Amino acid sequence: MNVPDSVAVIGASAAGLSTAEALRRNGYRGVITMIGAEGELPYDRPPLSKQILSGAWEPQRADLRPADHLRDLDLDLVLGESAVRLDVADRVVHTASGSRVRADAVVIATGVRPRTLPGADSLRGVHVLRSRSDALALRADLLRATRLVVIGEGVLGSEIAATARTMGIDTTIVGPLAAPMAGQLGPVVSARLGELHTERGVRLHLGAGVAEIDSDSGQVTGVRLRTGERLPADVVVVAIGATPNTEWLTDSGLTLHNGMVCDAYCRAAEGIYAVGDVARFYHEHLGDMVRLENRTNATEQAAAVATNLLGGEQPYTPVPYFWTDQFDAKIQVHGFLPPDADAEIVEGSLAEGRFVARYRLAGRVTGVVGWNMPKQSRLRRQEVVEAQSAHSIGSFA
Image (cartoon, rainbow, N blue to C red; front, side, top):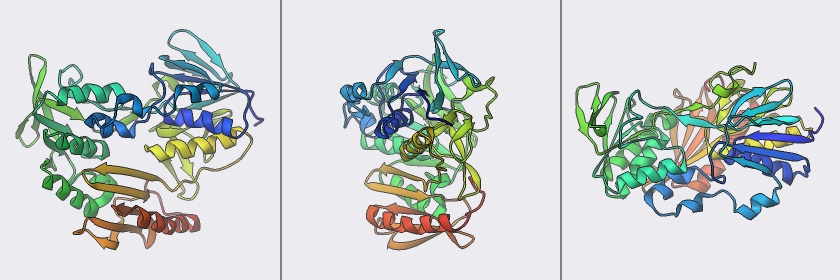
């Protein structure tokens, strides 16, 4: 592919903006059109469940870049506009307002949206958390509430619960797994996280699913579990995962399966790329398809896509990294943690609240977790790099 004269980036969050920045940083002087569904300048999402929700930051502090930086990028920035259709052959993007944007290359960065529970959307006091407005609406309700139930024990649900508890809210986490972030950390480290939440006053009702959300006159009043137990609540947060925003591409002819399916170069078709949460790409070192929902991937994948747009042929083979801050625990995860991997504490101890856990599958290092040991976990990351480069870890993504 020749270097395109024009690039359309569909999505104006971290992945989309990082793509535009990487293009300019690498000397690209062509036309960049960025289309974002939200009507505000690009902002960061990790602070939403922590600093913004708690009130530690003013909302605008989450902005990814100041307005003058965006001007310097020389973008045709279109906000408050959704893409509704893509003509792949001609690389024409059709928007909800009827506009048509044609470009030599298109980068899809439309992200994901929260999954919801049937009938819950219409109830006052029921929230999801994906956007800045979501975070502000949830904070406003929490400031008037005394009892919160978080449905979902993953990263987002655990972070929201920790933040709410530090705000003095009576907080409960419910979900089908045995511990907070059990699906991300495995049984050993997630059990320690569960202990931390319990020590700080979070109630854990785990191992049982939700039967229904109770309400009175349109206001949520509680959550009923499949065990028959009822948990009263003034506010309920639904944090049960996310769905890639690919519906607008249904008639495009592109392959869509748990995201936008791409090759090892993040390419879905000639001149069509995907980046960020929406991209499901082939990871050459793993020999498997991977879709990563984390902030680091948004930046790293954007850099790889920009390189390939400018004539490179660089397969994207990341060692994933994400972090979460809950109470006084700063947890960093490098690599992949398959559900059947064996975890071993290799530095520090669980009891001390400072440790590094190394994960192995079939004798190979797949990932490391650092708990209040950022330097040590970063050094241990090299073991993941070496194992990944040497041979395939196996199909688990």
